[in-house]
Length: 397
Length: 222
Image 1 (cartoon, each protein chain N blue to C red):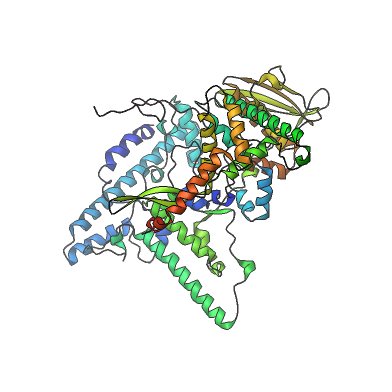
Image 2: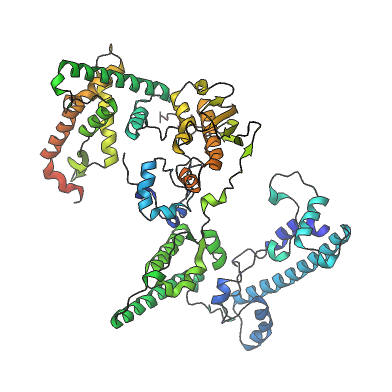
């Protein structure tokens, strides 16, 4: 079990040596780019004695080789320790070590080392070393110190190569369009790439693919270039390239599961939404379908709220869904002020009403912002300031 | 006030790149479209399909789809509000509306021939007053060669509404202290709705000044 616990400290101790100027590597896009010249760590290590014989090796290359060798050794021991740890764990749990999966490991760790720590990342874990230690970039230069990549000195060769690739795709499409026009054929409008429901990879995902850190501006440049590529009439010809960076968006309404109404003693349909929250108010709302529009809030009618605005808020979803006078509402709220309580009830009614209206209306209600929880809270006062944002008056003298 | 919806619908990819700021919502959330009319208008464009993939912010607690809701009136309430006491502001405006209506009905009864031309709906009166007092141009000081010139520049739609409402409110608050705000506000609104009174005069003065300074207009870009 020492494996599991030592992981954290191991990582710190050993990694200091490696942190310097080496970046990470993953095996998707970069692998494709660099597939032709496969300079993975192992290959370079094997090539090292030859290189030493041939000519003097540059300092940087020497340092890199040293680091790569150390890293390989380190990973090898880590992998071994992981395998041993896994077997121990399987034996401890009385299961077959051969069929012990990562999920079993996680469960075993959770059982054997129960942790009260809130942050999940702070709890004990045992994962394969490939996951724990981030992959790193392979050598970017040869023995004489000459970089392989023509854009090495841009600092982000993979990213700028990607931009070049996009432009090349665009140029190809433009050439194609010109040739087609000369022949008198136009792009097929039916095949046009429909980008609705898709979005570009997020910055983090792109960074993971490129194995490079990019800034916000560069990410915007990427998305703008991709948008331009998609907008070209012949963009469907490079659909494969586009799909590599497109990510489907989830339909927002379909993500929310609509509860089935239950039946009460009188045979009326009803739906109860618990945990209706807004500001510090919290409550539950029951909507009953054949109703007369009776509203009960904490045993009182709508005059429970003295302010007009709060009453309007309670009625908002009913008016919007055209269910005013068709359903009965029962709500229990506590905590917070009138505005927060009204907001909580509004959300509860809107959520419950989904079961009684059609799909189109649900989408409409979502667009109206009725189905979204309002997460805004009071902003805290800051020290050295008069309030959340306001500063003390400042006089020079 | 009647901002075009399209300006809100910035492409998703663009929004992502911005920093989050102070908002409780992630940056790709868009404002709620709580008015059914606006939703219907949107449905005709192809923006609507895109919207189905976009997360929406919750509707604000002063917005509603009730027939009593009016965007401009709501904004006016917000401008009247002092120290967060919106309840009072709303009451004041309601009282003012009542006052307006009384005056208009009195006028109707005094002059039965012009009954059709007199507007008695206070909301309509307020909207008309604001429209009448919206400026088109304003003056800004621009320094050229050590001399400050008053240069006329066009006012954006949003700012013109803001200025109109601010002027009406200022005029109402300036009047004698013995009369309560609702009455003073009602008078100002009625005056402005008929294209008279201090606010409209202020607007016209500003326009006249801009006209006089038209020679400096080129300093805006040179």
